[in-house]
Every structure is written in C-alpha cells, then in structure tokens.
Length: 164
Image (tube, rainbow, N blue to C red; front, side):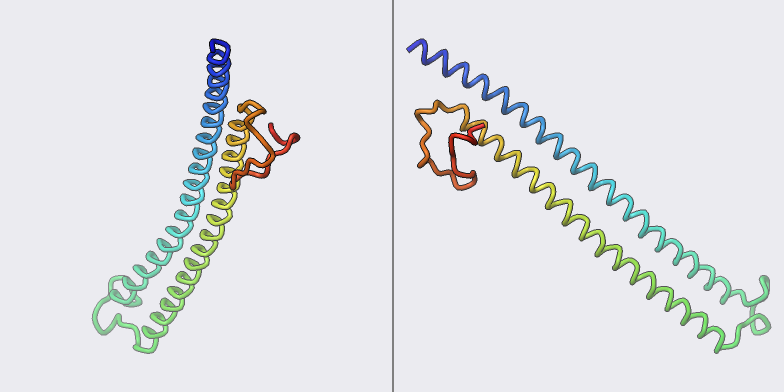
C-alpha cells in the first residue's frame, strides 16, 4: 500500500509540474494574442481616425470659406460665391465623404479578415496545447490502465508510438 501511495504521489507531483508549465505556456499564448489584437486595433484605429480627421478639417475649411466668402474678411453679398460654385464645392465635399466612407468600409473589412486569421491561428494553438496536456495526462497513467480500445473523442487514438 505504501508503494502505491508513494508512486501515486510521485505521479501526481509530476503531473502538477507539467500542468503548471503548460498553464504558463497557455497564459503566455493568451497574453501574446491580446498584445497582437491591441496592436492591430491601435494601428487600424489610428488609420481610421486619420481619415476622419482629414475629412473634418476639409469640411471645416469649406464651411469657413463659404461663410466668409472668397476674400478673407468679406461678408455679405460682395463676398458671396455664386450659387453654382457653392454647389460644386458641396458636391466635391460630398464625393470626398463617399471616398472616406469607402476607405473606412475597406479598412473594416480588412480588419475583420485579419482578426479572423488571428483567431483561427489562436484557436489552433490552444487546441494543440489542450491536446498536448491531455497526452501528458494520459502518459502519466500506468500502462495497464490504458488499452487500444480506450477512446477519447477529442484526442487521436492511442497507440504505443504516440503516448508521449
């Protein structure tokens, strides 16, 4: 009985050491994933903010120009633009708005594609960590408890060559 207890205790300690090491590896993977996601978001947010800020500055400049007139200090009828010129400027601004909208939509689609690829890669890595942890767990079992008929749905079938 003492031999069994000592063997079980040693096996448990080995398993705990291995599990803690795998936990640290998993935590490192999660932290790396979160850093990459934050970096991607920051870059994409910076690009979209730049597009919006540039359009906003252009819009403010046009409003200022239209309210002040062609001459800087003029106001009233002598400084006003002809209606067809105002309409041309507003239509150009509208076209610029459409362009910014298209760029933002393209940026969003690109971001979704990058996040999908990143999430797939992360899922694959986490599945491998889970499988290696399960293999480690099964490898800690005494061989007489394992048989080729042992079936665990989320692990490949056991064989004498893939126990570790």
